[in-house]
Image 1 (tube, one colour):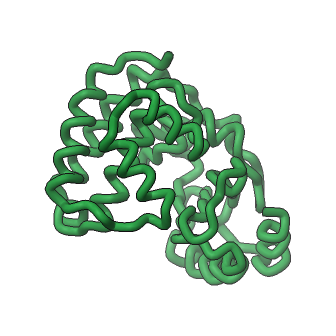
Image 2: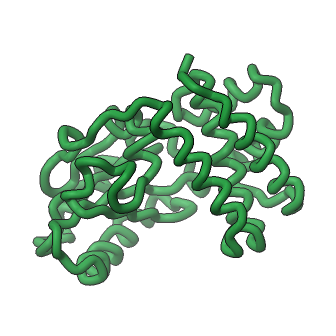
Image 3: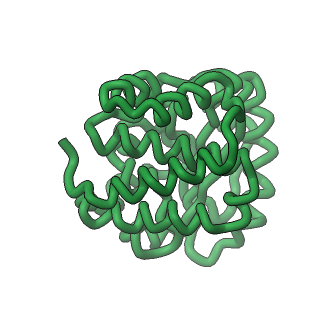
Length: 226
């Protein structure tokens, strides 16, 4: 992780309109799996900046510096600075700023600019969960997901992880798997094990759709964390 951060700082230079660049997720948390995990960045833009201009300068550096880690994907989420005062209702409600915010607060590294954690409101799960589940069901009905086995598998894995989290698990991969095993949900365990095993696409679309729909409906009754 240190090598990645140093590489970016040395090669990025000044990027007008970029307020902050933050590394978060499994690489900071310590459960990154080469070839399976993503490298996750969060870019905060000054209001009025041109996103495409900034991203066109960021991405080549982030991709080059991340190559030695062999990530499954390089994910660059971004948001306007002013929207951070209420991520759930402004801009795009990234899950790491809402339902998984505690993990983001604890496991992030500021690469460029200022830390934005102090700007974020802390939501109650009763406020976050309905919108999160509604978003999952919306995605399930979108062609991007419903006709794409890879995206369905990602959505199913996300659903399994959310199940574990809402039942007291951290986001560490081994904790998620252990909690799913404790819950006795064989389908969730199989889906998550497949994700950990190089994200192998071994399930049919109908199986994944049924899993996502049924578990999401069940989670609608969840009202608090253990």
